[in-house]
Image 1: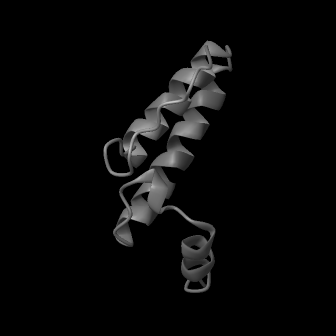
Image 2: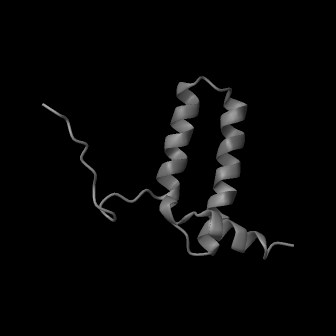
Length: 76
């Protein structure tokens, strides 16, 4: 019998920037990275999240190369 993969339709599972950041932090802990490294990552992701939220981005799926190129052109 052949197994099939089940995919959720778009919109049923949306990952927020905060939950993605937390998942990344937990992964870093599981990899036994130093507390200083984890703290540094946390600070960088916090700043990046605030930056994205200024542009109305709250979901990971909305962070696209096009968006990053557009906003990087506005930074001086």
